[in-house]
Every structure is written in C-alpha cells, then in structure tokens.
Image (cartoon, rainbow, N blue to C red; front, side, top):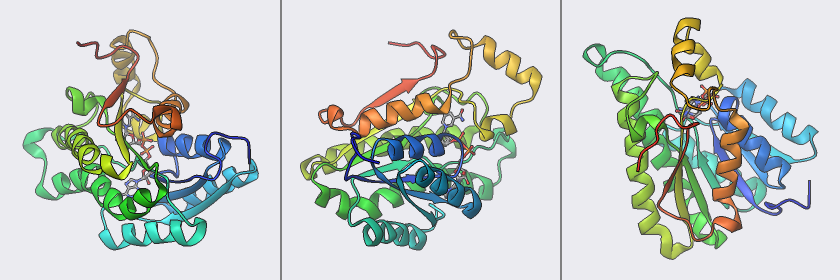
Length: 253
Ligand SMILES: NC(=O)c1ccc[n+]([C@@H]2O[C@H](COP(=O)([O-])OP(=O)(O)OC[C@H]3O[C@@H](n4cnc5c(N)ncnc54)[C@H](O)[C@@H]3O)[C@@H](O)[C@H]2O)c1
C-alpha cells in the first residue's frame, strides 16, 4: 500500500493478534507502514498479518512473549532482518486480572506487572538502537485510565502496572529525546475488546455504561487513531506525555 503517512516506515505492535493491538496494526498497515505483529498467540497473529496483506499492506507475524527478554530481542531482530529498520514501537500487549488485593498471589502480581509494565520496558530497550538509527523513532505505550485513577475492571496489580507505564513513558522520553525518539502514552477508558467482554457480565456492563458520559464503550479503531497520530510526523514535538481517551469517564484538571 502506498500514499500513506507511514510509507517506508516500520512499526512493531505488541499484542496485535486481537483487540486494540490488532486495530492499531491494521491502521498502520493501511497507512503504508510495514507492520510486525507480535503476540503470544500465533494463530491470531498470523490471521492479523494475513488481513493486512490481503488489504495490500506488508506484515510479519512473530511469536513473542514480551515478558521474556530473549524473545523480545529476537522480535527486534526479526523486524530489522525482514524490513531493515524500526521506526515505531507500540507497547500494547497486556493482561487484566480482577482479583481483590488481599487475594493476589505473588505469582499473579508478577504476571500482571511483567505483562503490562516490564514487557514494555524490554521491548523499548530491544528496539532502541534501531529507533535511534531511524532518526524519528516513536514509542507509544498503551497505558490505561487504571493508571491515572484506579481500575474499573482490574485489580491492584493492573492499576499499579499501568501507573508504572506512565512513569516509564516520562523517563524514556527524557533520556531518549536527544536520539530523536519521542515517547508517549495513551490511557483508554473501557474499550470493546475480548479482554473487556471476558471480564464483564451484563449487569456489570450496565453499571459501566452508566458511568461513561458519552454513554458507550470506545471502539478499538478510536484508540488506533490516537496512537497513529502520536506516531506520525505531525506529533514530532509531543513527547513525555499521556493522552486520555475515555468518553468523559475521568474529567479532571
Ligand atoms: N480493553 C480495554 O478496555 C482497555 C482499556 C485500557 C487499556 N487497555 C490496554 O490495551 C491493551 C490491549 O487490550 P485489549 O483489550 O485489546 O486486550 P485483549 O486481551 O483483547 O488483547 C491483548 C493481546 O495481547 C496479547 N498478549 C497478552 N500478553 C502478552 C505477552 N506477554 N506477550 C505478547 N502478547 C501478549 C494477547 O495474546 C492478545 O492478543 C492492554 O495493554 C490493555 O491493558 C485495554
């Protein structure tokens, strides 16, 4: 696909087999980027890559668990080996657990923090040399309204991990600005994805919808629009910031 704002650029999107990550990957693909689809789930990753190719784009599915440093290094290497460069990294992979604080085991704590926070750091570190070489590297971290306030559907580990993603965003933005890399976060409210459907029954959904001034969940494509803006040339002077996208659920100064 050509004539798009990301022509010639290469993007890695983690957790891109389904949900928000897939919508982000498809938007990059239709806007001209070559997209590396990284996911734990090989079947959905392959399907997402096929969909981008069927629409005329370029894509590569790579098995990667973002919590495993070796797999993350191999992911960055696969991107540069196949497409020659990395211009954008979207840290989207994450998991949600709803266990109440007093019942969270150490194992579950580490799983949630590693998947949402440590994985984002590992991917940023692995992609850094190529992002620096790109001359206009972009990192967009998918945080959450959970990290800005407290989670509606998730537990203490999820809230803590997403708050950590905002700190990671600020720190990397400052350290890597001289390398021409911008680092920003987006904090969605509640988005209609498999993650949300798996953790919300009909009664809970009614409550959730009542708490959103715009009266509906976000569509994943709306998160993709924001992520792609932050990854575009138009956003070159935006770094170290977070953009909330939640239909008015958290209106604060
Ligand atoms: N859905 C929401 O309401 C919402 C709101 C705010 C933030 N978020 C965040 O957006 C991101 C995507 O959420 P979603 O709703 O699309 O979730 P989802 O569960 O529908 O999709 C997540 C994808 O990430 C993959 N994944 C999970 N752990 C991984 C790992 N360790 N390594 C590689 N891939 C992994 C899964 O296989 C899956 O394909 C997450 O970081 C989530 O916390 C979601």
